[in-house]
Amino acid sequence: MYPVFVDGKDSGELCPASDLRIEPGRHSIGVYVIPQNRIWAFDREVQLNRPHRVQFNY
Image 1 (cartoon, rainbow, N blue to C red):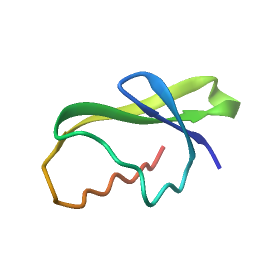
Image 2 (image 1 turned 180 degrees about the vertical axis):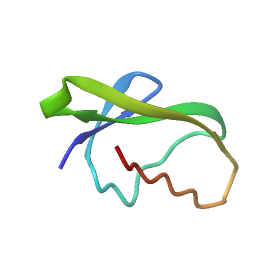
Image 3 (image 1 turned 180 degrees about the horizontal axis):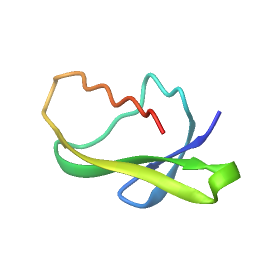
Image 4 (image 1 turned 90 degrees about the horizontal axis):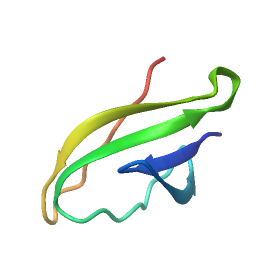
């Protein structure tokens, strides 16, 4: 399980997070991979009232 980051800030959730609320708009969604000591992140457009899934394969 890895910490989940939104716009570079720790969300307080661990991956897999299934109920994370993010405001609509463009955001950087990432996970902190402890063994690599880095955040893997992707930019995503989050739309109002539309579920969005981000899957990481590193």
